[in-house]
Amino acid sequence: MKNSKYFLFALLIIGLSACENDAFEDLKERASQDIEETENFTIGDADFTTYVSLGNSLTAGFSDGALYRVSQENSMPSILSSQFAFVANTEPFTQPLMNDNIGGLLAGGNPLPGFEPRLVFDGSGPVPLSQLVEGIQPTTDILSNNPSGPFNNLGVPGAKSFHLLAPGYGDFSGVISNPPTANPYFVRMASSPQTTILADAIAQQPTFVSLWIGNNDVLGYALSGGDGSDPITPLEGPPGVGFQQTYQAIVGSLVGNLPNVQAVLGNIPNVTAIPHFTTVPHNPLDPSNPDFGDQIPTLNSIYGAVNQVFQALGETERVIEFSAEGANAVVIEDENLTDLSAQISGALAPNPEFIAFVVSLGLPEQAAPQVAGLLGEAYGQARQATPNDLLVLPSSSVIGTVNSSSVAFLVSQGIPQTLAGQFSVEGISLPLEDKWVLLPEEQDEIFNATVEFNQVISAAATANGFALLDANALLDQIASVGVSQNNLILTSELVTGGAFSLDGVHPTSRGYALIANEILKAIDSAYGTNFEASGNLVDISEFNTTYAPSLLN
Image (tube, rainbow, N blue to C red; front, top):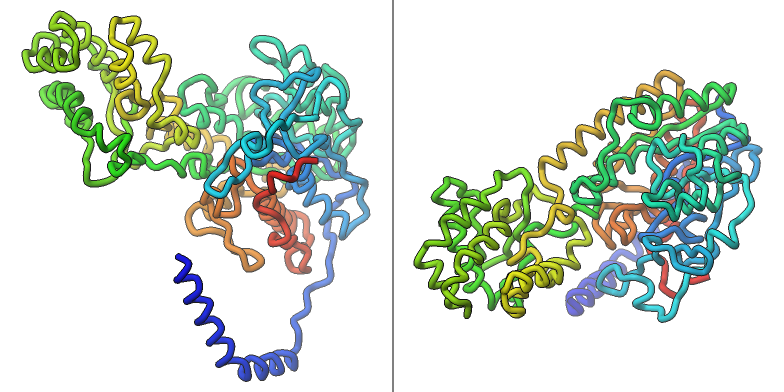
């Protein structure tokens, strides 16, 4: 790699020397040409006097798995407000800034579980900040040092559509209730414990609003691997339940309480195209890794007995086999498959070859029925992953590790500790649980919900003459071919793509700048401004893609 670098550098020097005179003449010629002038800015029909933003983490400026001060300062609404202020007389744009660049939250001096410091890049991949900076502690305490409002940026990380209408979403008692009914980020900014996010927005009587909500209504389901712990918001149902009436109630309340309000609405991107779901391949098992490769003959022996049952039942797509010649797919649990646990157990228990295999494991012959039952339970809905399956980003730290709960269960069933460990390796001898994989059927659910929700958002924008940010089309472009601006190309590659932060879900500061530009273009179309033609888009090259671990305060 080093030799290649210096070779290219040498070619560059030669090229510069050979073209020095030509370049000078070219510069003189271009200097004599007329410089294309941009248009003067026109405000059109837009009124940016008081701007309020409503939404979730994408509005708050969440990045690298956390909300921290510099990420907020470079949030999409903050960037927009700067552009508004540059071309018009506007009121100050206030945000509920965190106390530090560490991220994470405290409550009465105690860390809030699930609200951790940000991720940083260690040279090879994302790691928690605490791994590189010893002894760090968040300093943002939701019970002792909340900033004073009102706040123009009302983006609340974790909020779903119906949370904008929920009284008490900023009441601390709801944070510690089971299940939680409040959000600690809104506790920091709520005007009162029982207010709603929407009410705090309307109270400021904004002339211009950005509303980007609904992402979490599908994203929560996706991030949980579609395991049912965080279901997709239903389309139908009254406000506070179904997405359609909830969204219509939000927009209707804005229009009804804010005469002549202007707005830009953001739709929902295809969340399965983000790096969180596209970074971990379906076949990450490398036979050159001795921890895996040396076990392939044993693994094929174990699965060989189960495969005979699959083949006998005509379920050949379930056959599990590892190769020493190339990358291997992980083994996953697929809830959509017919459960063949009983068939596997019943076929294996009396089989002489299987009994001999059980004995070879160091177990008595009488243990064959029990082992057959355990294998049936483990592999009754198992198969190897295909390119159509999407593994969530956290699965990368799980695949190949020993599941302690599985070991404890097998030991309780009389299986020796060492053998229990061998049967409990995630994605290899133990199928990955549903929470680690988005199956094709689950992806279809997400896609269909996204299409339906976006139809609701588009209809609301059209009915009220609002601008529309087509975030769905933007993300598809980033994921497929990339987006070029300011001599940069942003893609959806984790770490190197520039658009997405280290959590694989939220944009970088540069990504938020790109989104802000797309919103400005949408405002041009809806309200007759000319941010783009007048050269008043932001230069995305001025915004960071990562922040150093040393940036703490």
